[in-house]
Image (tube, rainbow, N blue to C red):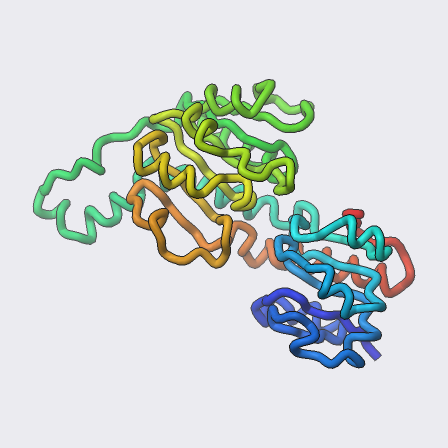
Length: 315
């Protein structure tokens, strides 16, 4: 009989098909488990599958007395309270670098879409303004990519793939991270120095308490009126209110965002700027990205139920 796995987050059914072929999935569809299943059903559950950014309150863990493993679908695990999991002796695994290439691709897509004014250009054509030769202040020529300085905050697997892609556009790549790496890019001694140095700042750092609102009003001011901000990390890294104010006051030139402080992100002041390109947290949302994440999930669960260490442990 297949081992049971509790699905804590809301996932599209298509993403769970391969996993469901190997395990008996109890899908709570994003609700607290006790709202969907009885205490008796939850009592024997030993493994949980979750989206890494979704917070798992201690009260939820209290309803799962036999839980021994939490497996994150994707790279992130910022929703995990490691003090709680350590105290309860719960192993945590993730899918490291499984979607790194897909996320890096979107980072470059957002960068080019913002800097080349793709949305205003699309609107200019669709509205008929181009055909009627109507002038548009949004269609002034932007700087090209050649020679531009691309700053990357975070030089993990995703940051490295972004750097390789950015360098192919004949740019100068610099970075800041907690430690210096053996990479052929300029290392800046602080995030402040990176923001002042670069033309485009790409956020690729792992989210956590130490990175919360690192991109605030002061950092945006350092980026400057010609600077562009791209975030494919987590929304918590940016003070979103400060970003809206910076865009409104033309403190920076534009932004491209795939992640937000609150998700799903509803239309608001941020969605009204023509110099901002927004996507609904789809950085890793490619067929190959999902397959690699599923491979990691299955490997973690297979190892756990075989009594072995997780294949991709976080803690």
